[in-house]
Image 1 (cartoon, rainbow, N blue to C red):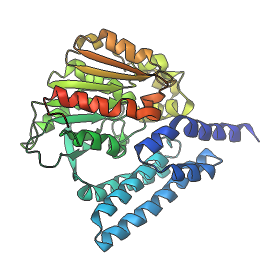
Image 2: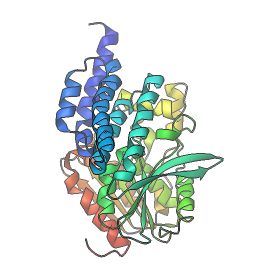
Image 3: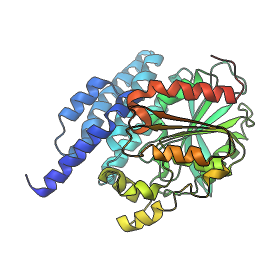
Image 4: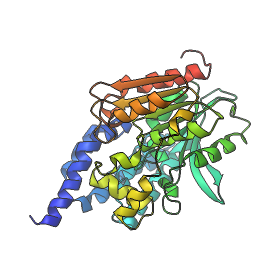
Length: 362
């Protein structure tokens, strides 16, 4: 086996080892994960293999739609969107193939939204002369619910958020997951930026235009690099009433070199950097140094004890420097975002946020 082949095989190993709990916890059937990854020997095969499995779920969904089984269609199409997404999520070395899978991700989730319970809608958010794209879902029967703005991570998109959304929706909280700079539908034109309070401000400005949402009760939530984004936004955007930060880095550059090669390459591409040196320079702009102390709203910070991508000292430092009421939870045995033990924090953070909003216990 030559050196190039070894490098490609290493990427497959990284993806399987680092993200298998995330795939399954997000809604990919375990059998799908095992069967698809068992057939991949080279990284170049990754996107096509996952897209083929996604197409199977998409066909189930379209058939259910044609037969009038709309609830089933929504479930199948959401699963298809997840599989397309996980085909493209780190496939930045082949942009045309990645983008084709991404377009299918967006298409399938869009088809699913009207048939979910509760249903969702695609929204566009004005942003510096351009548009960001989001998915808004409101809890059934709520006239003017509070809202949690959902910040996704480096390799995530709004279409991956279904499981997280449902937990908040069940507690009476509307969800607005969006693709910010360097993410999802924005990644091709708008690069990653460290001052993430700017796009979050645009999202809250949009919420204030909606009479069916309670703009006086808005929180921010973020996962992985989104955990940095949510904390950063909370430090500057004082309209936020609470913040949840899940495995967010305190300083991206401090962990940049220790990240695996897939993550570093994804950051380089999505920050629109030409070289890894330029990417590392941009990584320095993603920091909470001198900023975390400005977080005055209640914040819930989660880290995984065994998180090798964003070690738990990041969560501890955010919590130590925040000025407002803080809950810090380092989950014993937890990996990155504690995807291997979501039951230890996922409902707990949602219950905490419902309390911050003054909602009755569900």
